[in-house]
Length: 327
Image 1 (cartoon, rainbow, N blue to C red):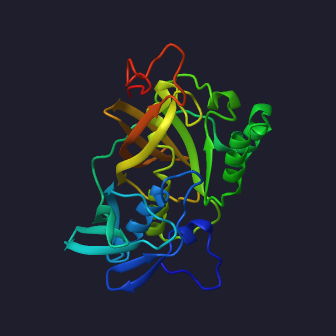
Image 2: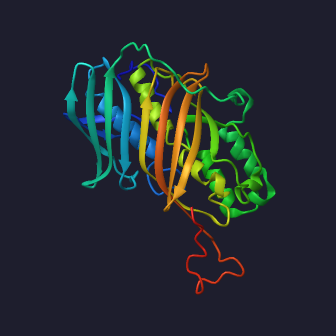
Image 3: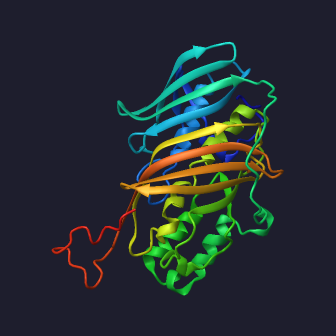
């Protein structure tokens, strides 16, 4: 995945860049800690791990699946070291495992499988949903600016700072929510809705033609918003009361079905089938503009919610669990 020296790297290329420090051992260069997050963005950890594994296989192989576990939050103040184990190289399939470490502790593990391309007589897919095209939807920056204009947000120091900081983050991915601008009040008083959402995504800038890199970018994107789908039917956000108190990925899987370009619009369809035991389970499908299903995803994560203040009529002494909504 080398590029001409004269070409300027896009933000996503910088985010997924690795330094080889030994045979099968790589080190991250830049790590992104989203504003207010507990650790490094999970999608970047996944994308870098897949990039490390890809560097150890023959170019004739293309990733068709990955399965990973998030064990500890990543620290953006020090590099992540990725160690690749070459498990198997067969005629059609190759397998790699990757461990990500910081301060001597394993924070993340990944197993991925690669395949030599082959023709299939059996082909089917779930149809692409009919949604608003990305050109008719506001950008992330436009949505944040819209929220900041709301008088109750602009006058609230905590809210105002949060959204101003988010606007300043140099995001490598353009995301457009099919719900449009929405209402600022829904952040605090969100309606309960079907546990489904649709997002258009693409990398900002023009990427190299290396399809292996486009797969790494898609792995990065696949962690965006997926777990949040699990709280839609409960009418919860980070700002509501009761509201989300913790959300963190536990495991994540991605299946790559067909080639695509990550610098062209991709539709991410997300749904949640279950929340229970402090965990949410979500599934996703990613389509190209012409309706091809190119990626499927699955993710389970920690999802916890609680009241920020005890509501009137509820006593912690009488009911210790009253302030913890069941998911």
